[in-house]
Length: 167
Image 1 (tube, rainbow, N blue to C red):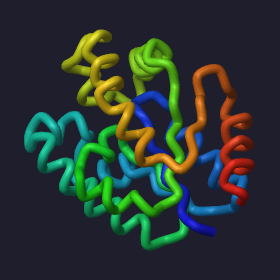
Image 2: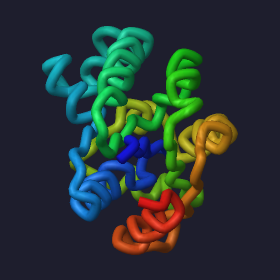
Image 3: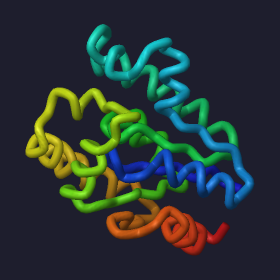
């Protein structure tokens, strides 16, 4: 099995879908945000505050390269696509873009009190939507498969991914 890399904006469902997909395919899952929190020893929002986004993105790139060496389902962070190096690394990989309507994404982000996102703390809803639209073309460019998650249950999304990637 080739690794399946899930990309998309905050709140698109990368963590939820990676776990469900890995269970269905009997594969290991790498949730990059979880691994990074463990490695850096603090919540990502705290790390952003203390060390800045640039330092965080370096850790993210290192982890992406490591994760791709194993066959797994990889849930990336929403900003992984911003680094040119990551774009090159992902260019020939099986990348699935979990896409959702901007309003739905903001609603999911605001209602998720478990995963507090650094960029959601310091940006209002309009800023989050602008951030999404600024990244949308990159997500689409890198994706081999695009799945709209807006009104779908995880089981439907997993089924659609499997159907489209032929696993």
